[in-house]
Length: 187
Image (cartoon, rainbow, N blue to C red):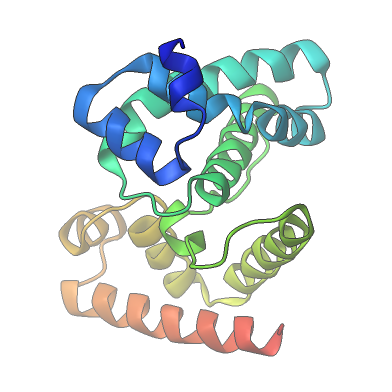
């Protein structure tokens, strides 16, 4: 029995752990192979070009090699879905100069496994989050985006925006509270 065949019986979490311990690309390939069709579907949905979508599938795999060591992923499929979506949005942004909001994988990680039916719910939640971010006052929106989406610290945000450190903290806390209220109102 080949190594690939023996790996195919392992769970996503077991494969993730095995990859993180040994950096074995074959293990990562088995794990990614389970969801490559989903990644292609997400890419095609956003990019709307088969060849560019195929390229995106490969680029996303290449990103995973490093990103999986930086993130504590508990539900690989849902994390990969959000990562793929963000990759496509960044591709569109760079290709057309249009502005999109990145959705942090930390915001979307949850305990529920993602089924095909859940992908609709995930997309609905992402859309609601994007709309809620737009409802924040400028200062809150700017600070929340820098802190959660670009992972800047308070000091960096203060330096970038000119707001005092205390104001930055206040804008982030109030923005987070307002986002929660807005998301609760959207179900």
